[in-house]
Length: 219
Ligand code: E4P
Image (cartoon, rainbow, N blue to C red):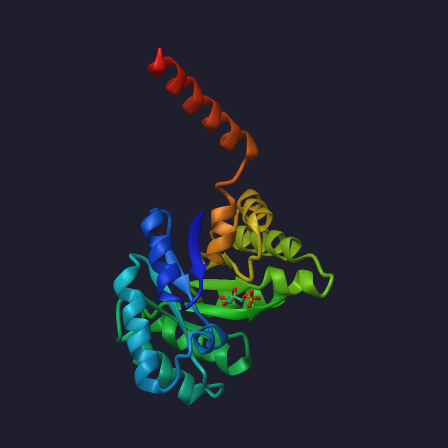
């Protein structure tokens, strides 16, 4: 299972990269705005900075919603770095654009996916990744993880190669359940990844080992 970090914060991206388990980064316009990044040049420079830190794929989202401009924007993003994945919303014009990008060998991430039907369309258009937002479904009392199960079943039935990128991951249990279901990738905040480290028996066990070692050394 690949681990992506869902942020545009360079410090957090560096911290995740240093941990040695990072496979990529996802961003979106809200995450870019949160870091105060605006204006075409700044946005481009920020994506370049992210690409210089990580080894894996970096999803950069288009702002346009009409076919011609999605293509224009996506081509500009794709030429920044081989790591760039053009992130396109699940709308009619977006599906057409994903089909075009896929025919040109440009990687895509179909975002804002909330149903199995949308995920099926994304796969048929040739998306590299599909991003079902499990946390946002949970927020409206709908089981986000069962959507991942449905997409896994559908993709396996037909051998679609589109990778299931479980997005809007909020906590460690989301990550573990996604891994059990067979999501190809998860993207979430650094805090969710770091929570995987935690177990009280690890902490107490280590404290005991160190205390015993110190005691023996003191003899
Ligand atoms: C997906 O790529 C999105 O950036 C993201 O996971 C959205 O998550 P949120 O619901 O926590 O904003």
